[in-house]
Image 1 (cartoon, each protein chain N blue to C red):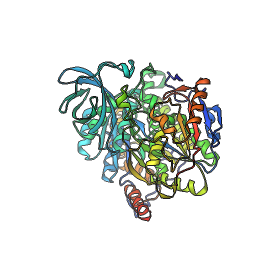
Image 2 (image 1 turned 135 degrees about the horizontal axis):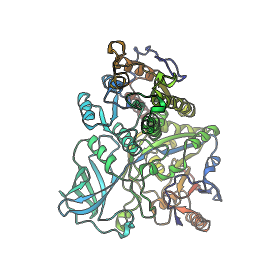
Image 3 (image 1 turned 90 degrees about the horizontal axis):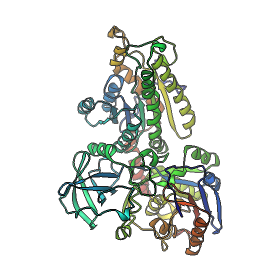
Length: 264
Length: 349
């Protein structure tokens, strides 16, 4: 796994302290398939409070049903009109937000095509989903994230990128160029909001056995591909490395309030 | 004053009237408000995002068209969204001034309202024919989805273009619990927060479910503001104590922040962290215990916001302020110009 931002290399050294995801408020876009679904499952298992977003109502209901406690939100992050309804539900249902995972992605033309053979509409759709969607949703939720940072809970925006963002793979033009834009947005956001305590990180999960990869490379042997659950573990490790050391976030403020109340 | 008609949160020509602790009145571009702050000051803003709290639908028994404006909620608990207090209007929309809106059909307990995907039942009237307690059917997530999809921001006739949520969410908007925007916060953007940091000014937030500002009905308006739940984070309470200890001033961005901080005032000039419900109406006889300065919109006499300013200033200075606002063409309402007022009266012990 290559780390595309200059943030600290994630480590798994936090196993002795409390689970960093217990009670954490996390939103995942594209949460009903591939890496997003694996993230929802892993986060629920870790005791996080999860809201996930996806376009298809039946899939959202099915994944919510399989993952009790997870909040399913129907919405299309590539649609400008959907962003605020999604943000209302994310921040409303979770009462705020600690971590946003911009995972929903669009491949561009299927089958993949050389740039000069790519229809403008396919190119635009890739940018709407992979760049404009994360831009709009992150902007709408920045207030909630910064509030979490001020309260000492930490705040992380994790953007799912790709090695196509750095390598010039023929036929991956729409996807690669949009993911490169997302990776650069991530770096600039990170520089601008460092003092607010909101950490930004882009991650390349590698080639995974997902519906999207199957659409890109129809003949790929699944045995040669990474399992989404394994990639999800790496993503969680990257997030954990960007969170402040703490006990269970829910318990911390309650305990402190009690202590201060007793002192008054 | 002139109504600000365009939904622009930070127009480049926004103005700021400043009243200092010696009751001297000055004028500045609002974008320069950070220059009036000092190192050691603490700025506290309301990070409530605004709910799409206007719901159009029908009164099931009569099929009459209604607009429901959600106005209050018992707590800020994300799951506690099945019961709201609400003001009900008859047919029409925001383009008609609220005072000219037709009445809804007579409402009684048990009446059902069909509001797009949301179904609600009138539980009881709250001391007025149009102020009701509504119970929404379904689980919390269904209510959130229904509000998000069907609701529109509450809007008044002075802004003619339909408002979208991005027009009314402040830059710092977090939990969507306000029924109308905490619009003093429109003055803030991320650049302003960075400038505060550079000056050594601390910035913290609280969350206050700011309610509706006007109903178009004199008797109802007398009840404003309704009870409003709020939450003060521990980090904010600690910052208030630190500001006190170092002699810094506490600057409230908006009347809702004054209301929450004063409701939570504790011995020694600090505030209690945690959740509370602000029930008090601040005014001429109120003695402020926490807040030194307010950044607010421009408010006209007779509104509850204007009443709150009387806790900061004597009536003669406030009258002078109003005359200056009129004489210099300040704009009013949520997208209007601003005032920065430092308390002239001594802080209560």
